[in-house]
Length: 282
Image (cartoon, rainbow, N blue to C red):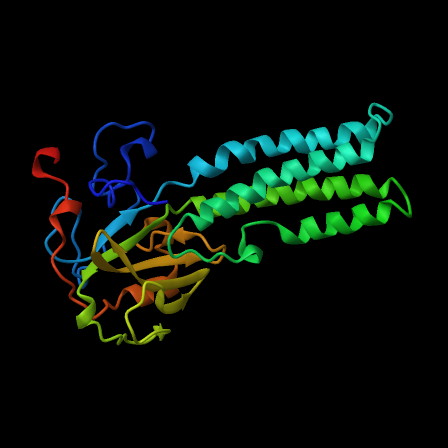
């Protein structure tokens, strides 16, 4: 999710980081400047060049609901381990099970969809689909065959949850952000050097080009705010979540670094003053 006001649109809302009141710095821990071959700037300098735009950290929408999920997963076993406590133990267990996984899936889907340029594919979500599918299969088998199979299913659901948490942690290691460059759309020619795959020769507020990398792909898209047009670039993790392409956690991604080593042949225009942090806040 983007910051609401123009003043915080690039640096992010101060409240996103431990309730800070002051304007965030140009560089937070782990954030890297583009290579010297790129024309880049910062929100406190402006002028010309690519500037990082931060999105809301994923800890906000994900950690609290996912922390409640195991509570419902534990509760799922109670009506099955102690039958007769309710009028329909299996129905209650299914409701608790669905609640447990709703606290995983719904926050993941909403958090990802709130990120501009993300991939909204459900199968791409950072979920242990294999263990979840095996657990569901065993659960269906235990009804006609042997109730004890249900406990094997329950164990697999726990494995699926724990592995899903690890996958989500892997996504959260690199914070969400993108690079922006102000543009005059009438000057757009749609030409990119290899290895970029051109998806649209015309200016579009959708994906224009992409480049495959290890663990995901770089994307370039058009975007706009308040009458100003921008070219945006970010790294889309294979889970569909957006990640900062210039972050030290991705510095070992050789495919990504190889693409980013070649600056895009685009100059852009001067940054609008309303997005630049005033000098008195430096």
